[in-house]
Image 1 (cartoon, rainbow, N blue to C red):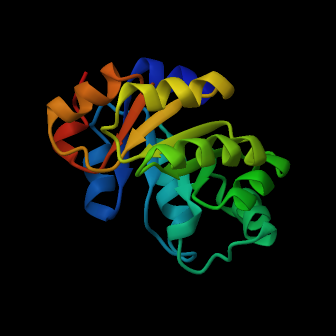
Image 2: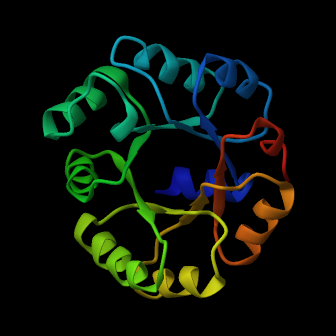
Length: 189
């Protein structure tokens, strides 16, 4: 976890990359961490290698990677052939399997209401995630506080962060980092 935690301390903005154009832009952008939010089995290794050559950590969103199953075999293949620094997923079992396979695993949580905070805590306990991404990104500070009480892992805020003030608010409310797809926000310091 040291690599991820150290990277987000160095730059709290994570580049959420959706396409080749984003990858090209990422080369000269400050983020030290990249979430690949698209791709398919035939091009994923090339994208991962490209990000790693930039000296950045790269995490594959397993739920959005086309051609990879949502099972342990997909994780073994990903680790053996594609070599990302880790994965992110909304699926608790995949996060747990990833950890068992030695991959850094980020559990994505959707928090639309107070009840889902409790559910999120339960899912994090089950998955044994290395970090979590909470969506939407701008939520009350008590959500981050409650999640942190039972889980001493980095919290990333993601989703619906459109302006600099959204990034600032998410970080002020307790997120350790933010993941954003808007390239103009990648240079936020």
